[in-house]
Length: 402
Image (cartoon, rainbow, N blue to C red):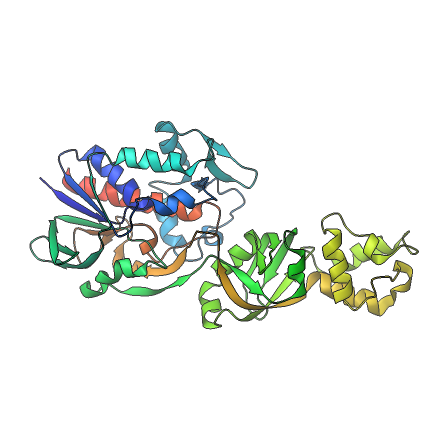
């Protein structure tokens, strides 16, 4: 009778356990979770609604969704991709809905439906909560240590211990000589000390970028009371995670409020001037930019708030044009995105057989989920990586036991 240990009762761990439980009914499966609850992160993802995957429409290359690990994900999607994921959950009785932004949620809009589905799949497994694995070594079998000197044995171990800020969950891997890439936050909002925060709650479709780099992201940008958030900022934080860490999260930020070129900005302003010469600049603005933000940008361009379009002049229009496409801010820190967290870093992908998720050093040792150096932008992509890697690891274990 095979003994299988899964370290981590999150998305990847429970999904892997479900496949194993069904295919290997005689195996003894123990799941060790350091926290007090299983699937705690799944319960809060998507604002408690669980954005469990994405249709991937609008993603030209997987590197746009996965700044790190896209090559591996591309390979694993041949086994289990986002369409496979939707079919799997629907087969479990979970009705799904697709949003206009291509995110997939359960129709119930309740993350606990996903939690219950996965826990139901783990029936028959032994889930040990509040049990942090402190060390692991390979003898004839794997020896796991936890608690006050307690030990457990396993023929197969699957590490799904998650990432930051719980990277300590996988510290035992260093004892095995497994190469670990430094774990850093990769999904967060920007703290900005600027009067723009007085317009908290304002949302604009914009492009955010870091000057002097290739890092750029487009999407809804939300002004908050501490700085900036929304998909544009969250994607940018993911793309530039390591760069931002090196800068200690202090860097210039450029915002293009119209998602256009200088020529586009001049054309826009010319249209606004035409026929509105006697109207206040603050009273005539494009529908895409709310009036409060427009008035702020007018003042930031050095124009009087009581100036009329016919009085602006060439110099004023040049300054306003530059503000619309190159509005500059100073990021002075980061803020965690709600109760969710994602990291870059973890087990180096060079350590893993990329067709099976098995360790190259230790046969019988597998990895799945965020413990790997794979991470994604917001939108269900990180959970999809957990489902995919968990599924492939389970299938590999099942194949070796046939």
